[in-house]
Picture 1 (cartoon, rainbow, N blue to C red):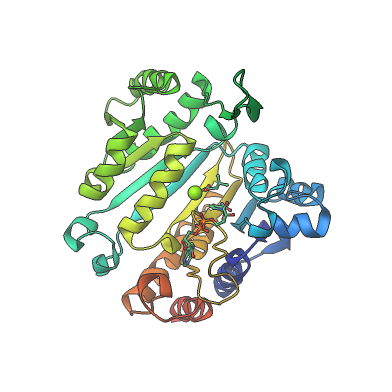
Picture 2: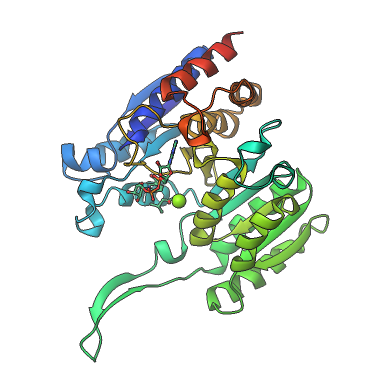
Amino acid sequence: MHIAVLAGDGIGQEIMVEALRVLDALGLPDLRLDHADVGGVAYKNHGHPLPPETLELVMAADAVLFGAVGDPECDDLERHLRPEQAVLGLRKEMQTFANLRPAKAFAGLENLSALKPDIAGAINLLIFRELTGDIYFGEKGQRTTDAGLREGYDIMAYDEEEISRIAHIAFNAAQGRRKKLCSVDKANVLQTSVLWRAVVNEVAADYPDVELSHMYVDNAAMQLVRNPGQFDVMLTGNIFGDILSDQASMCVGSIGLLASASLGTGTRGLYEPIHGSAPDIAGQGIANPSAMILSAAMMLRHSFDMEEKASQIERAVADVLQQGILGHDLGGRASTCEIGDAVVARLAS
Ligand SMILES: NC(=O)C1=CN([C@@H]2O[C@H](COP(=O)(O)OP(=O)(O)OC[C@H]3O[C@@H](n4cnc5c(N)ncnc54)[C@H](O)[C@@H]3O)[C@@H](O)[C@H]2O)C=CC1
Ligand SMILES: CC(C)CC(=O)C(=O)O
Ligand SMILES: [Mg+2]
């Protein structure tokens, strides 16, 4: 098991320590961890947010554990040198076009949600976010209009292959769940979405047992708060999935709880929490490491076929929450390290 460990910036460093302690506690055989710089720290040490040596390590590894990138000190750099370009570059280089972001209520902890407990308790959804296309990767820039005004532009585009390959993966997943798939778009306004909807309908023909619905993204944002229990699999593009998954995290309880797996065609994957580097709390030892720890669990499941070990970690995290060991994001006082300690202790018991 060769894992590239890219902790990155801000709380990425702090939460990665805890995820690695959890992996260590499992006593995995043949575990090889190789660390490398990424993001702002890589820019400062090597002059680039995704240095060639980091990329080389990633491409040689079986899986990548990724913390977060983003550093306010780098916000004014040219776009290609910004820390965020590292995670976009990694996703593109690894061709991890399918980003799985599960959001599930923790039993007995419905009161942690920003929603009313009975609404929050029904959450059990899986967002499939397309990850290597859309407006994040289209042509972009700034120019001057004929009227002499500064203008920024970002092209949103999807081709049919990009849509169908993630749709197949999402329909497949729906077959193993409650057999409901809601595709989220903005087909009342965007041509990209008109094609998205048409291709999803075509792919649906191969999965007659899955109930397909379509929803505009603005309605989906509202429905996630009104009645998140209606969703099983949500399939959407890069920018909509980015936004809706942050929202889903607060429906569960905190952005510090939601993990993700980014997959391509093989078993190699990129595993990261859905949140960023949280510069507002970095260095204070109060970040919730659960999302990072749960991302490591997703890595064991998807890249190494270790379902039992993955479930063990997930149960340990749920138990620790149920014990009332809560981080500051959930109104508690447990530090990053104390949460890691508790998960490790739970695994040992
Ligand atoms: N995949 C990545 O590496 C991502 C990077 N970013 C970058 O991260 C930086 C900060 O971005 P923001 O918009 O502030 O988003 P963010 O997700 O880093 O933080 C948003 C809010 O949630 C809190 N938060 C996030 N994770 C937490 C955790 N584990 N425990 C407790 N509280 C947590 C933060 O303290 C902050 O108040 C920016 O540079 C941004 O570009 C943002 C999202 C994803
Ligand atoms: C750099 C951003 C696109 C990362 C992000 O917000 C995400 O993947 O959730
Ligand atoms: Mg995001």
